[in-house]
Length: 162
Image (cartoon, rainbow, N blue to C red; front, side, top):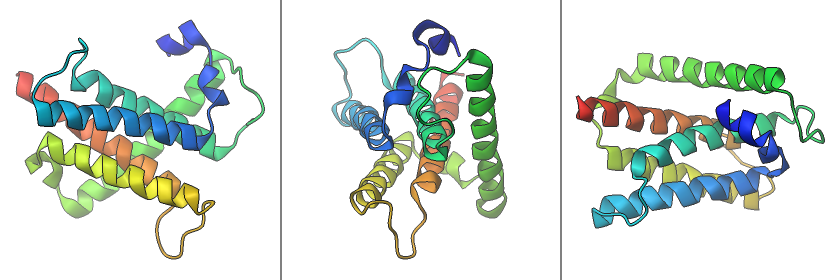
């Protein structure tokens, strides 16, 4: 919401394919840092995972198509859409945690990065197929998984600091 106050909702101009590419850039940078063990830009992987969460939420909002031609939204509307989207993502996380237990707690952060990249490659294929899938989940489900993996990574990063 702070960035929205600073920049407005300029992200509304982005097509979902552009959001997918932004997510891919962030996940690729994280993987590069993980593989090299170093980075030259001051920010490490934590801000990139935060960016993935935010871009994933933006992508889901764009997919809903609400007021798609209205680029500038007021803060109240933006916060309402953002909060509703986060709640949907959290609801999915809780359902999956019920079924899988908290298996994610035993995963490595690098595995979350790889799973995010897998989901992004799936999304790119779906986008290249004009949104058509035969039996697979759509772009929205993949965006939700990406956000959840990024949140899990952020939780693990915080736990490692303690």
